[in-house]
Image 1 (spheres, helix red, strand yellow):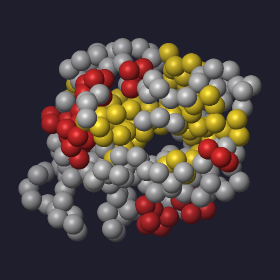
Image 2 (image 1 turned 135 degrees about the vertical axis):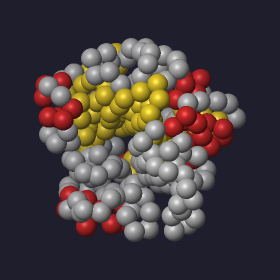
Image 3 (image 1 turned 30 degrees about the vertical axis):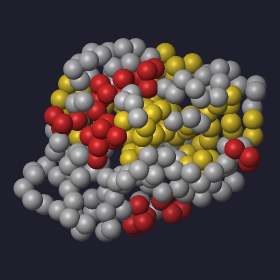
Length: 267
């Protein structure tokens, strides 16, 4: 099977060749979130994020993004549309080559500069591996990234280390404790939730999405540090068809919402 990616020959438009669910699935993600067509549900319990500050978390360059590997026993999500406890296992991001594009979800067709994903698994299945293909196996918090004037202090704990993982496969420990709660948008009035999928292969339809309505702001420097990551293991002059080896435009375009109900939950 060919290696998937975001280039002309292996990007999202081609994923269906190797992963039929890409074209045949009924709950593929991301989607365009349209507030006017969302149903409000005041009966749901509050979404509760119990996040812990942890030191020595590993940060790696996967060739598709950066990824922070979390410790599953320390942080969890409950409440909201979730029927069980979901443990945080990793976080990563998607972004564009230029400002104005990069997020996977959109709101009324508006794309943000990037999107941060906090991935959790349903503890009822015992492990991420067992939960990954179950209809209620995963829950992902989606947080939009918007480039502004000021840097984001908590996000800086990640982006300040990206220079140490320039190449695909590089791995380093974060220098500071990371608090996932510090990455949540404090000014969001609501979040959107719907049944969806992973946005990267194998595109498993196992995700309950929870996407905040308001972005967090990061600086141009923080965004540039993500765009500077390489998607190759050896920086020996290899270039893609556009003459670049950088991880850029690593987002999947929106998919058809279909008959799915998207709920808007006030915070």
